[in-house]
Amino acid sequence: MTDTLLFDPRDERYKSPYGAVSAGTVVHFALRPERAQAFSRAVLTARFESRANELVRIFLPWSGRDGERDVFAGSLPTGDYVGLIFYSFRLEGLDGRTRTLGEYQLTVYDGCEQVPAWFGEGTCYQIFPDRFRRSRIPDPGGMVGGRSVHAAWQEEPEYRPDARGEVRNRDFFGGDLKGVLEQLPYLQSLGVETLYFNPIFEAAENHRYGTADYEHVDPMLGCDADFSALCQAAHARGMRVILDGVFNHTGFVSRYFNGDGFYPQPGAAQSQQSPYYPWFHFQHWPDRFDSWWGIYTLPAVNEGEDSYRDYIIRGEHSIVRRWLQAGADGWRLDVADELPDDFIRELHQAVRAADPNAVVIGEVWEDGSTKIAYGVRRRHILGGHCDGLMNYPFRNGLISFLLGADAACFRDAMETLRENYPPFAFASAMNFLGTHDTPRILTLLGVGSDCRENTKAWRANFRMDAGQRALALARLRLGALVLFAFPGAPTIYYGDEAGMEGFEDPFNRRTFPWGAEDKALTAWYAALGQARKSLLPLRRGDLRWLRAEGRVLAFSRTWEGETVIAAVNAGDAPEQLPLDGAFRDRMSGERFTDTVPLPPLTGRLLTGERCKSASGVV
Image 1 (spheres, rainbow, N blue to C red):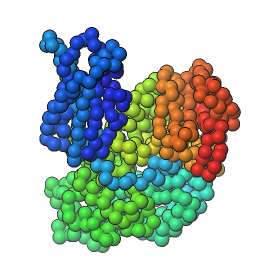
Image 2: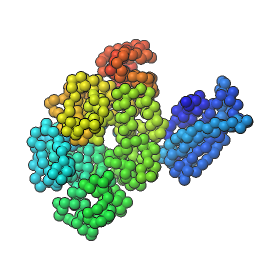
Image 3: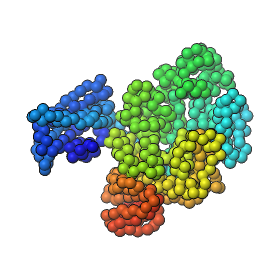
Image 4: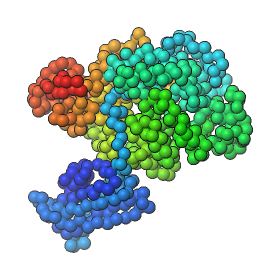
């Protein structure tokens, strides 16, 4: 077991400042070995990974005593370095004894740029455009991809392979931008401040991740003017809009590759003289080419090709710039760890040039500070690349806790991120319980797994029984409370707040159940969303753990002397949490002094009796 009295990187008595630091910071270290161990010398070794693993050794002189412990202290300048430093310690005794500690990680980032704070403060709502809301039943005639449209909104999405053994994803329900526009009042009632859209550009498949034309909204969703009108209406309600940028690959069916010949201008698959031919890498033209994860319908692009970068990033009306000019407020980068770092950096510069208040959020499934892709340590959150990342570690840790893991595991996982991430990246993380790439959170919390041991047909037809659903709803209320109270942008995957069920794609992409929502669950989400919108400690406050033990998780957020406490009991036995003063449970209206009871499967959002909100006292 680590002796945290000897060294604890999360305690500023041992390492200061806490966590990641900006370039130029001098970091102070201290070791406190027991005096009885008679160590006479301490050395810090710092390995600057991005500087060809250069080693820097610093002597930590003895600087006094702290009770029964010696103190060895010294400092490490970071200079102009940006990257990861891995550091370790060596204690030496006069008799030749030694003790080593580490390696530990120190993230050094470029802190020159101010990152817009709005994304991490408010609630984000993820919309899968085809399945959220339709304003009419569209006619797919003449559209790319040979599509079909479900007549009934409540029908099941197609999941079975066709005669060629392929799942084509060409069945549409016709969700559109006008449908979203109609429901802006509903989204506002949830406290939503950011709309994140899965791809909206013309594409053959219902998920639209195989882009056919970056320059236009898919005609089934509406027209380009509909998008600008939606942005204008959202802005009038205090909402912003983020688009999904899929720049690692295009569609096989697209004006660029044109694998099926739908578009009149020759694409890379028709002619090696096509202006798009250099965008793709063929092993044997035209039938063997690089594609995303070997899926032929998603040909991979060469992001280093100048003409591609000109089109996506550099031009005055490049794709990245033109949609910001049309009303968007930022981009979420699909498979960010498969895009070259210099591509993301250049894209980030273009975004800021077009709109200094726009943000770039990256899709990364792991700790973004330590991510290695294609043998390269990625620079996603070292400054000037991504402003925040999708927070799958948050999702994984919280689900594990809700399903039975010790609360300390969630706390430790989040503290690792807080220690490794620059403050801007931790504050701007996209936190969530589910996305279009994961099973529905309600199903996971009721069943406990993705049930892949069963057939896909079984998963398609599965619905939870009353007992499973009741347990899932109770757990989800707790998870949502933690989600909305935690630093980072609480993100709702459309329909989770309505009680939607489903395993993997396409069962997690069913249509929104308008008129059949779980109204009690929706009301819970709305109350949390409005709390996030109005309570400044939840938007900007620091994070302090009050209890993370067994089935109880409690933490506080404090801003300018006002505190909000989130406390949940995910277990089946009653618990109590001591309080320092009088608090009111914003969810139930109850008031407590000195201690608050936590019955089984209960969550509380506690505010001080005169906690200030964004609009006054609550």
